[in-house]
Amino acid sequence: MEPKRPGSASQKSAPRQPAVAHAETPAGGWLRSIRFSGFSLVMMVVLVLAVVVLAPSLRTYAEQRQQISQLSATVADQKAEVDQLTSQRERWNDRTYVTTQARERLSYVLPGDISFLVINDLPAVAPLEAEVAPVSTNIQSTTIDWLGSLFASTMTAGLAPQAAVPTTDIPAPVAP
Image (cartoon, rainbow, N blue to C red; front, side, top):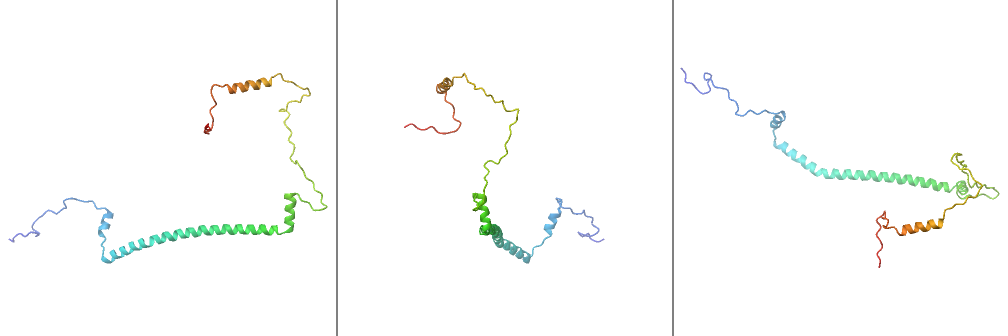
């Protein structure tokens, strides 16, 4: 018989299993499968440096483009205003326009013209018949003593036990 060697086919051994079984996720297996070489590490460093160097410049570029668009809009508005003012100036250079404006705004007329000025051109509004009291032709007199009523009102207001509370916060004047 042959001596038994460790690892020979005649020796029956139990299959080895790890002490702790870990469930591997697809992302974890993908990350472990990545191998970094020196070239890929240098390229990643260059990429990070490029982002760090270019990011402020890109931000400045975006801000300047925004300012340019705002200024372009301002220039367009000002050009439109200049065009409107130029057309208005040209209208005032026309003698017919000036004459028309003088007639409408200042009520000027040319010699020999007859002008009619309507003072009240609003339509007369007739009040409703039910709301209007009939007008009396008799003179009526009242029996109220208005002087006594005025004196009583003044005395009541002056002799009131408590002053009225002001509705606004106005400070009282300081007596010297």
